[in-house]
Image (cartoon, rainbow, N blue to C red; front, top):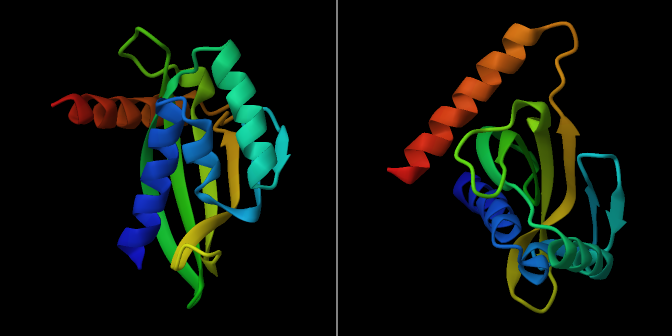
Length: 153
């Protein structure tokens, strides 16, 4: 199951990076929720699709680089994934430290006419500000940059 949950998270980041609102939203349960970096909330697969489609149409977004820290079962049908993520602005190669994030994903086994799959119940993306601890910010940025560099190879 660990691999399935990691794959779900990776597909989420890939959909964002491709500016694919439908692909991103389709990874969520019909009643799934997403909390963005700025605290904005999207409730339900349709709202997630609609809001992201508008964002992707009007903006060239930065690309995510994610590192999974933990996948833990909460029950046989519910898993928690904790990750850290950084973003690389369009046309650049370096992580932008001020938008590093801590991400939490709750995946739930659902049968929504697609067979039994894990879908995202909740995805939460919060700033990794590390107020008063610049060494933690620098350490995370370095780790994310190494992950980004390894993806290029």
